[in-house]
Image (tube, rainbow, N blue to C red):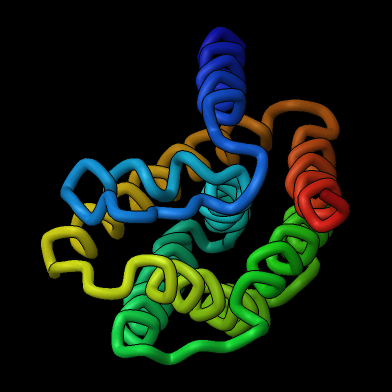
Length: 189
């Protein structure tokens, strides 16, 4: 229980530090900018932690790595497309919709099969990546590498939280509601 409390405090502190809206990189296309970009927007932060929580729910546990890997690969592809100038009007709304869907998937637990969860995760990873790529046009490979490393770390944090939530009565449901409600709140602002 102590680890869950510490994790909740850490997630809460990072969430409070995150901006209430989208994380916009602006001119900070540095290693530090890449590392901070996923953390400084509540939408990105919730999605990355949400994917980690989803991964922790997968059975057998040996398949858990597939969700974060699919999300990261899709984010990388979407980022490269955005860097190349691809623009789409669904990238930003897609990030908010992803929070609601991830929240529902978390709340549903293992009732949704891995293939469907994997496809949805990759699709939303593409939306997140395209949004990031559009914001960070002209970024270097170093920026993208730092950005993806930060995303992976947040997946890991979500995974650790998800494993702890399995031992808490209604923990999975509460996490799903929090991620989904965060998406709805951001959509309304």
